[in-house]
Image (tube, rainbow, N blue to C red; front, side, top):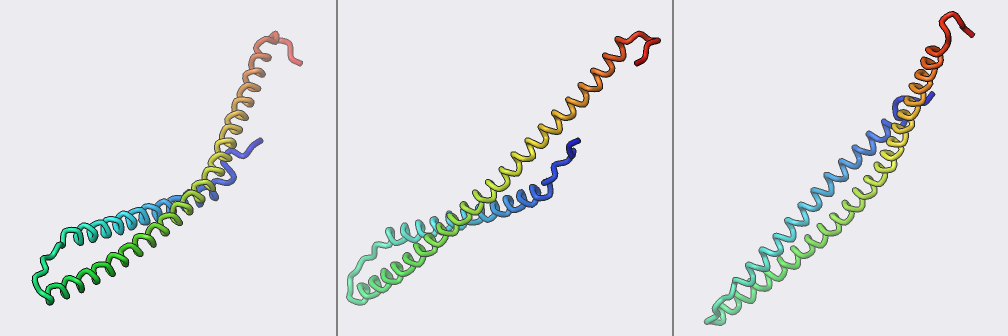
Length: 143
């Protein structure tokens, strides 16, 4: 007789918890990457709009300083975006691995459920066969 409950149910629950955690980390990494990309896009757009009119040496020095500062800020934003992309790639790989581990157990669970169902049908058929055999026997005749 086969065990009715899936013997690895506890492990499957644990794998699903790990998969859910990995999915949450992936969602957070995706959000962070979108935010960094938007920040960089905003900074680039702001720099594109900041065409300054230079009418003195002092204004030229101020524009040069502002542009230098902006380039530095843009490099920092690009570095943050790159780091966010690396984090997102790692989170995607972690989620994919967690999902693969869960899928393998889910397939085992499906096979177990199918085997239990087949066993139930086999036992039911034996009972029906026994009933049919007993119904065909004459009432006074017993083996």
